[in-house]
Image 1 (tube, each protein chain N blue to C red):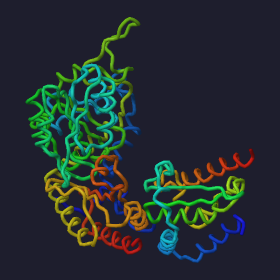
Image 2 (image 1 turned 30 degrees about the horizontal axis):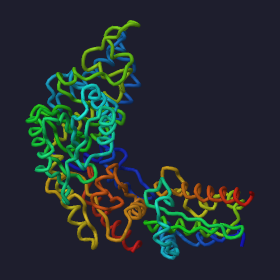
Image 3 (image 1 turned 120 degrees about the horizontal axis):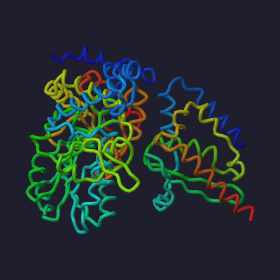
Image 4 (image 1 turned 180 degrees about the horizontal axis):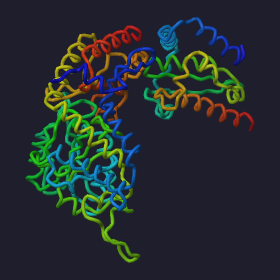
Length: 141
Length: 404
């Protein structure tokens, strides 16, 4: 599936929910199912600033795609991470850089996009794209 | 007679809905809501007598000056301040603290000591750290115990003839502890140190008599006392304020200006450079009148009952822990549920129309002390009800169910 198809799949999944509670319950489930990252990856240099909860993001280049792993100490934040990783992990750097994030609005999580929201969704997306930019530069060398 | 139904009608915002639910506003430690009479006073000023003050001879300017200065007198009377010139109207607590901290930059010598408490808001830590960096003075910290109370025996050990200043909040914004400021002031005066008390969190719950407690500087913000944002108070003893250099230069604060030298205006104008927040100052006075009309004893009685009820109801939730368990506390319940991040609880209860604060509450040293990332903080005011406490408790239970 390409990144657009994954986003559409997410929009489909979230459209089944009638209210915010079901949406959040699903996000909490996604958060719980996020693979745990190792303690050594939870180092301060992997910490994303601007989040009220802690978010660690780790990126690796596998051939020409980036695989992201991430974790948080808050479960709703982990749910948001799970959604982001499903969309952005295992994609090529240029695909990540060019991806738009309108799907977040469409799955009813627009409120988390406000820069004043302490969960740092905006910071997370920025960090994902920064990694993509760094790896793209590396690949082009 | 304290009638909660009548009082709630004074606050138009309490009628609104949030996320489809009636608003339950429990973030009063961040800022209080405003009664209609305060809102009206701002509209009235701009609609009928808006003019710059202290300088115009025209009628509007005179009117505005009179009402602004009456507001200063209301502040003076409320805090039982000896002279109105000892009331500096600032932009708020942080501004007030910075005026004093900057003034002491000229006074402190290398090796002097200043003392802060372990439960300060960042606004009462950072200016003093900056001051110490500039002057070479040393910052000492009064530790606290696990109940969230300052350890006075440790405080006494810190005091010496090197101590020049002591800074402590009257009520902790993160824990709600009421600090024993009378004792702290008395002990500091024994070594001739001056004391600044940050009353931002106290003044909506406690009526302060600055002469009775003999405090040297007392600072607060109007917006926590049902007044508007952007205005606050610095009280200082006249003889101390006269010694401090002004923090900002500009209009209003001068006596005479030539290119060779400027002489400063007398108190309070020396510290009130530029056009002040005129509507804010006026509305601050109205807010003080409003609170006094209800009565601080009535407010305290009602709030104490409310917080006791909330504490008891919340503690029935399994795994819930309250931080700040001093018997001397007011208005704030800071808590966590075992195994759940405060941010998650805050997110869910917001969806249920409840405004609480989550995070470190600008008091990171306290979170460090308890080894927690933050807390959920519900902070109460006299316009909150037991029914709202029930809504909170049910919401926290629901959040717990969803998150565990």
